[in-house]
Length: 216
Image (cartoon, rainbow, N blue to C red):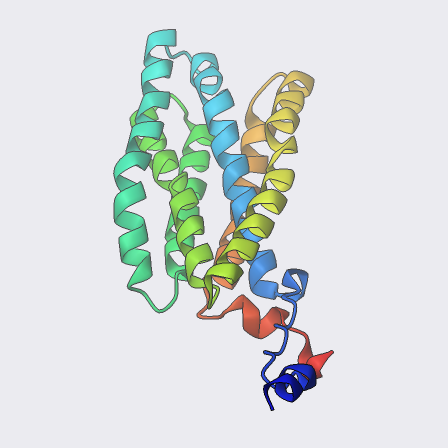
């Protein structure tokens, strides 16, 4: 009868297996990519005008160059996610943006006053990695709950990674009295950012990596 069916609990749905996000290589790749691109963005916004000022650029021009960096990111925030969403792998976009960053930092390191607008353009393109990271977060989970878990993990871990960046760059500048070492460090960080982007950009879902196997 109805009472027996209720007591037996035969209609109860099985509990969903917990999503152990830290087991997912893709989640860690996204967290690293988020953190490293945030480091580059914070350093650019905080220190780029001073880099140009020390290279002999006027304060007004240095401010305009920073505005250029930030303005370039605006249209990219609309174009890049649309392109990335139609691609089977988003890693190629991470590579292109990373190479833009490497080129921009190389220009700042070798001849900052020679082509400042070009360096600003390249760094603006590189800083467009943030909307790419958000796009990948939405594509790397099968469910809305998975996207929420992945977003919380990638962004919180990423910001922990990025927090020391501007402070470290400022300390290196004060210690060495120049920008060679800080800029070299920022260029070097583009390499793991590219690697993390390639890892995060694979056509994978965190549920396939993070759910416990064998019902454990």
